[in-house]
Length: 292
Image (cartoon, rainbow, N blue to C red; front, side, top):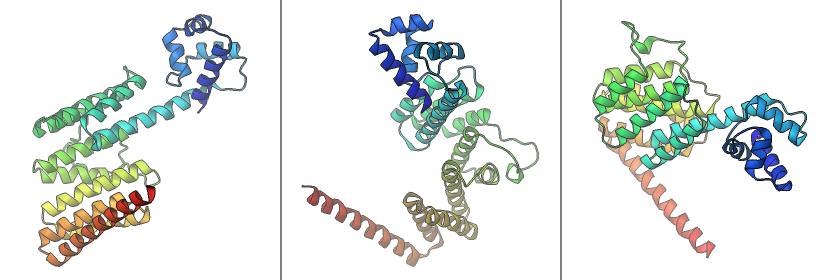
């Protein structure tokens, strides 16, 4: 990474000259805290500071835009880590990832502010916030009211990752509180817009939204559509060799069989889970013995 390499070179150069961070910062006309951030690869220098670094270190051929691109890629990773934490982790992990996000964020940027607001909302929900209140607050952050036209009929909408995830959380909350029609409208809105199967992120989001829709269709006793939805997720799990998604599909299929009264199908999946658990226990014992 260009930014980290620059930081390492600066650190080595400073140490080889026997300078403190304060001395080096004075030479570059920047704050010691800024220098510390640059050396660790956490802070991208301004254009003016970058030019002074190049003169001091006699660096040639490095484009400033390479640094900002490097910073953007790192921040992109931080944002995705925060969304993953909000989706499935505990409150401590959310706090940790949010703290990291705040180190990178532009406090004047509206989208960055929404990341913080959404994180606070999810944290409060995990702490016992009323789901009706959560739905109301998240609608204020990510409005999905498109007048008289049904949202699920709209196409060609570009959602950012944050918007997509926020609407997904709202759909889940609507499902859990029994607003099935509204939840279905949002799930279908998400499936009709913004997915790109060429990216790992959107592939996972598509699977999550499809799973939510499958649960909803089972709750509505629309078993034919639920089977199609589960079949779609199953095909993606096989194509991408994704064991986690395959397990999710089996759980959904088991739930569908149970609702349909298909005891034979339900038993087959139960037997599969028991066999899988036995196999995992066997390998755990086997490799514990061989490691000794």
